Length: 183
Figure: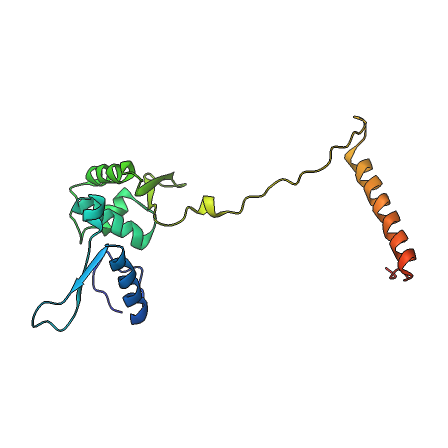
C-alpha cells in the first residue's frame, strides 16, 4: 500500500477482500452502510450512515474516525491528523468537538487525562473495550474462620498447617501401601 499524505501514513493496513466484504455486509444489515452502483459505473460504491444515526456534525465525525483508526491522541494530534476530513481553526475547536462526543449518550469518546511528560489530555473512542474493565477480577476465597490466640504469629500458624498436612500425607502413603519418594 502506498500513501503520499504527510499526516496520515500510519497505520498501514492490508485486509483481504473477503474480510472487507463480510464487514460491509454486517454493517449494512445494521443500517450503518449503504452500497450501490450508478449507471455506467463498474464498481460498487459504499457510504457510511454513522453521522446520521448518531446525529454528528462533520467535525465530530472526523475526530471519531481518526480516534477509531489510530487510537488515543491529544487534541493537537487530532487537529493535525483529522485535517483531511475537516479543517479545524484551532485546538479549542477540537476540544469543543471532543466535549460534544463525550457528552453524547452513550459517550463516544473518553478523556484519559495527561500522560507523563505531556501537556494535553489524551482522548480515546469508546468503541473498543476498556482495558481496565478487561482485566480479570480476582475473587476472594471464603475461608473458615479460625479462632486463634492474638499472640500467635503467622509463621507459627503456617508451621502448624504444614505439620498437619505432612501427617495426613504420611497417613495416605501408609493406607495406600506405597513408599514415599526420596527427596
